[in-house]
Length: 135
Image (cartoon, rainbow, N blue to C red):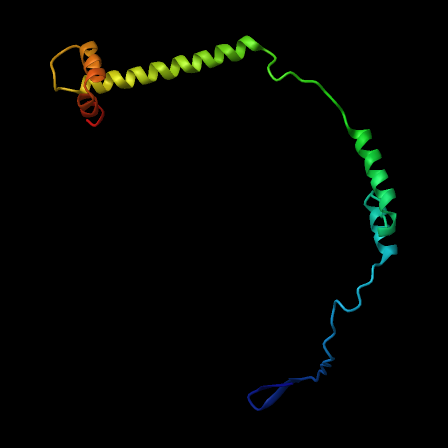
């Protein structure tokens, strides 16, 4: 390859690229047992060959049994606290729903009656209930 500035040569070099036949990468699959054993040792593990499957299962079983810890923990430790929390949430929800219903009934100007009468009318007349809900 040559480069020029105007007519003057600036740089030139030659490079040879050799192109070989395409090799099938999966044709020569070999396991490097020494490297795998070294890698396992360096990472704190162990390497087992396919023929050592029984030894692998035994090693795993021993490690699992050593690390297995059984602890009994009750699901609910303070019964009354959770019951009171549940009751408080339900009371809060009921109060919010009742306030929303009262606000809807206050907005309704169809009848000039009290809120209790409007609430009863909603339970008796579904068309009136629909009218209150859609305002």
